[in-house]
Image 1 (cartoon, one colour):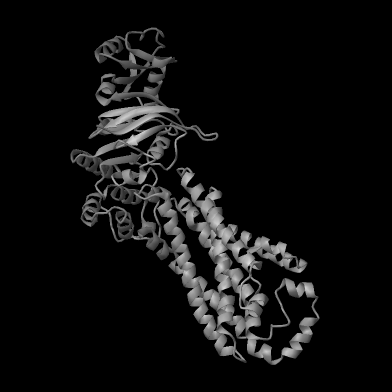
Image 2: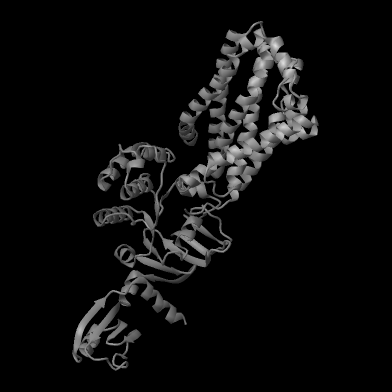
Length: 265
Length: 294
């Protein structure tokens, strides 16, 4: 437990900054909604002028963009991108931080198993993401209720927002795997930005082709907001794919971390 | 009882040399020196004992238990001080030590205060703001605060001023009197001579010899360097106990073991312009061991 609290404390500042930034991004978008909804017809004409492939690529859906849920889905593509970076940062730093700050010797010569260390750190990162999402969800729900033009389903709103959390978990797991595979990560941000954007653009490409199979390649496309709004449900096969990635990456990380040599600096 | 027993321990990795077939044991209550030049494999051996790295073959036990299999249990009673200390920078010394203590299920706050006082360490400073020497002190307190039964030190004196080194050695001797066994790795012979009962000498990943310090001192080598006005007959100093004889113009140097008076008498017979008699350094001692093997 002591490692858990120590780690959580170390994440405190970054958690606060990320949570605040995510809420700001959502606020920025949602505050535009009232004026956007007022001139809906004008915008519709304007947006219809863009090619369909491009609209799909940037996540615009003309059918629902003028409802608060649809508009929020659009905003969500940006907050999710940021949130993915937050999660990937956390994951990548989990083990590599000890190597970079050269504190691995300190921790690993204490009477704890490596499993205990990794588990504590993992739980701390998870808790940090959980706190981010709970605060975000409450804040964004309040904002949405202020800018709405007609009532909306809070359940669907929460379901949409949760996709951000799920995607974060996937990137957290990928990040941990990276941190145990790559022996010395000099800059966490470089690794995490590169990975997150690579997957993001992979998602953009898969969207334009309209091929469902290609969606599996990018966690960003595991949750189709239009589908969620329509069915109040997630797509099962993608939910499973996400869970499998998280489970596999974390299991592999444990295996590698337990077996690996911790070298002197 | 042997606190540490190392049996045919081998660790190879990639290009860099590891250790080959290392065996020695450290008895309870002993201060055991582990000495060798940089890169000889001291740290590799120690890191294997602490299960930071895993051996390629062979094994080691601490307190009679396998050091890999029972690592967490064993480590309750081990205090470790690495050669380079780095800690969570934005923590206060006090908080780091508390964090360190939280891993051991006992109250260490009194001991922390005592140790900090002995080592003259300010507990309220941020680790970031500490000098290298002061960081080292944090490391020392961190390694001793839980009163371990086995203290493992990997080149611990670098960065400490002579006064602190003295205090640190006294502290170690005190811990030793209380029953702690100490494994002390160093590349400085005088440190080891001052502190240890027995010593293992390692070179290029292999144990060269394990000897009592007293035996080493009996083999008390002196390094002579004689400068003369005229070039000497190169054979002049070939007597019993002379090693590594080198003549370089007017300067003749050699290692000598035995009754020092015989050499002094020889020197008195010639016209000397300058004379140095020194303790041989570690490298030269090693040279001696190599010659013995060859």
